[in-house]
Length: 453
Image 1 (cartoon, rainbow, N blue to C red):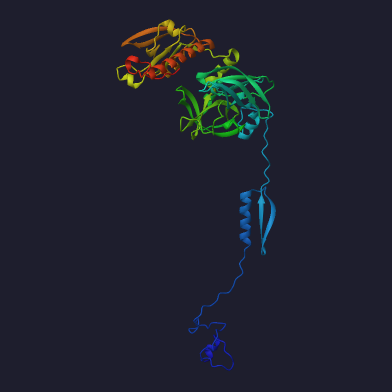
Image 2: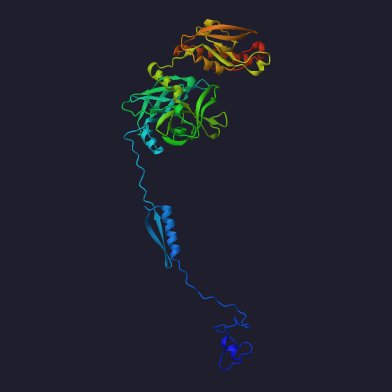
């Protein structure tokens, strides 16, 4: 009986074998657990040492926040404390006292240096509604200063038809602007304000840019979010884009956020040089109010228009060779009759080189010099490779025969362009009359389809 007293503690006068009379003893015998003890032993409570965990957590905090972090306040939870840290990073300092385009600039530095060179442009456009009433509409775009004495570059479509032009700067100053000259085919225009000591942008070489390089745009999106900066990369170079009026243009593609009102604004490279003129954006519909496709914006390469800009400032127009005709692609429906593809002559302007050489409406130009022509744009591009005064040989398909015609190119001037516009307007009226009479078919061609310039 005494052997069980090692494991159980009993009262002095109680029967150790009576039911309910035993209690667990404080110890085990040398042979292991007592076979009559059915409840599990409670482990001893050991005090945990948490110091190393706190040290590790503190090291992680410093690793994340940096050695420059300073304590702000302590939160007390019971006997433990938790310290929060905040960085003491110095604000970015933007130095614009001198712009060195040999070095890369941050987007903040580009904005600080050239937001004063970027302008918002608003125009009043006077038109006549269907009731014969004169109405004035407002439009908005962007531009940028190119000379200290107030010459500003923008898109032609921004100021096209404007009766009044107003330029606004980031400091709140506004100026009335005068139209100096424009080149509609390349969508550029120069306007002038009466101001001095302006900060012009620095023109860069768009041909040196690579796909993937960073670019920044500053403009006037929606005509009211003035002097907004967006940034992205060059998505593609030498992208041929067909504009809403059918013209094709060589463009820089970018994923910078571009919206209505950005047109005419500068596109900077990472050195703060303007390498493009923001011009267009893809839209999911024909209306400018349709939801837009994201990440597909386009800019005119500065290499393509730099010389033209100088001419616009000097003479007010771009000197280029002129044929004096309006052309369009030959439609496939007409080609089904055995007519070759090429540039179909739609309008021959009286008094200009095409008429002098004997070109006629309905002719199809299939070659200029040694260059084969399959579309209207190919003819225009090839023609622009010649100089004013050059005589070129055109290969022409006329009434089932192929002939050659020599044309001496003249200089395009505003007066001659006005003559072309008048001739085109007369064609439009005639074409509408023919459409109303429902004239169609090859015998009435070229009045069966539209035209381009």
